[in-house]
Length: 136
Image (tube, rainbow, N blue to C red; front, side):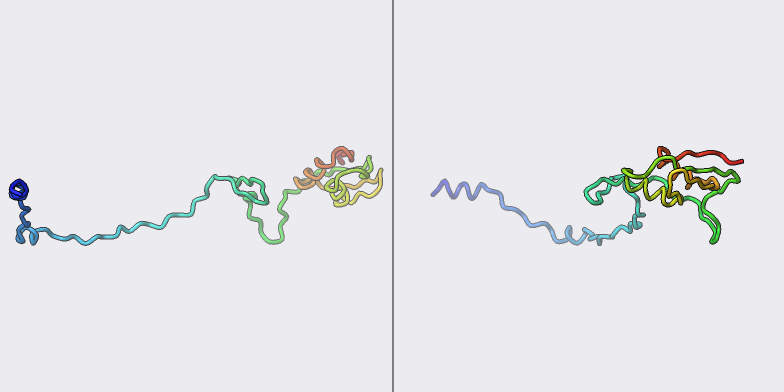
């Protein structure tokens, strides 16, 4: 027991901090930093749609703003004569619909169109079924 008393006596007692020192410490209230709202940014990450990856275009598809009543395509003065030379039997549905949109029904039938980017795309799609000639 004597040893236990010595150990207890040897342990220094913790002294309480003086009250005056506690009064000198100023408590600063926390100030919330004002953060400007983040602008919505487009991420370049691909998006999944119907289990397929869709990559967003970096440029808008249609840059030009057209006035009401004006044609969206620059129509040239040039004209082309389109003649159907092969049948659409056995063709895929897109080619059949394109030939129908051009107004061609029978082999050998021809039509004259003013040249435009839209027409060029249609002719390119069915180039194996038609013959194209320039009209002067």
